[in-house]
Image (tube, rainbow, N blue to C red):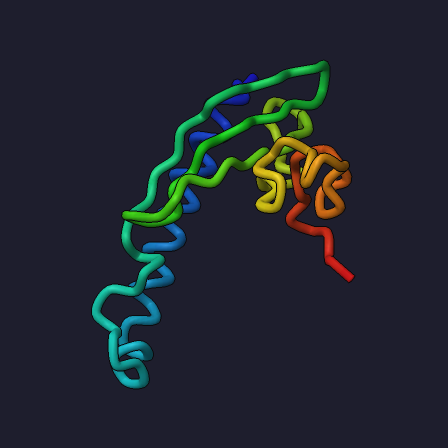
Length: 127
């Protein structure tokens, strides 16, 4: 059985490799059409740190602190996982609410953006 930590580290490694391949593939396009095509912002390597893992039966939550690129502010993310055979699958990704900074409270009331959870689902669309 693959551990949650092994799974998420594998995800980060493979995501980085995919991003590098995309940047290499799109280099001719960027050079042809973009003035500043030498090193796109997203190509500047970021970093991640797992800050907490919570496991409950067939689900898990992985909280990370991620810097998307050099010099950027760290974002806190939460990956929601489900067990799938001998491994895991990501079933949702959340980011720490930017309005309340993850506290769930904004201006002494429940945060309207995250509903008081402190997290915002990547898949949710604001109206």
